[in-house]
Image (cartoon, rainbow, N blue to C red; front, side, top):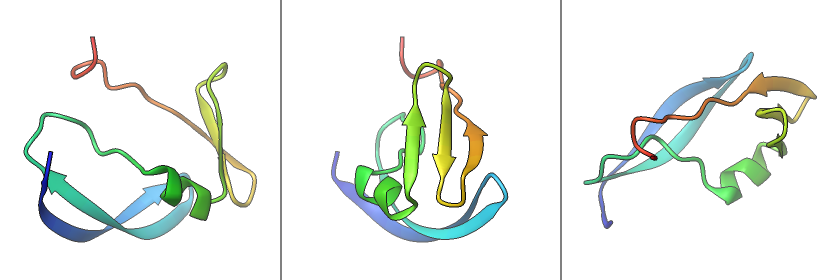
Amino acid sequence: SKSVRKLTVPVQIGKNKYNIVIHVVKAEIPLLISKDTMKKLDMKLNFSTDTAVIGNNEEVKLHLDTTVFH
């Protein structure tokens, strides 16, 4: 889908706060973080434990939004 709006929003991931740029699209999808953004956050994903380690070795739990994906 084509972006209909671009916003900068504050987010908190674990204990860290960031400002990220998001593109709003006309689709029923959750907020997705791009691979480029994950690289900038030095994020490492572990799908076997559903966790991510971010920059300063803080581990956060990943959540799956099952309302969209079947």
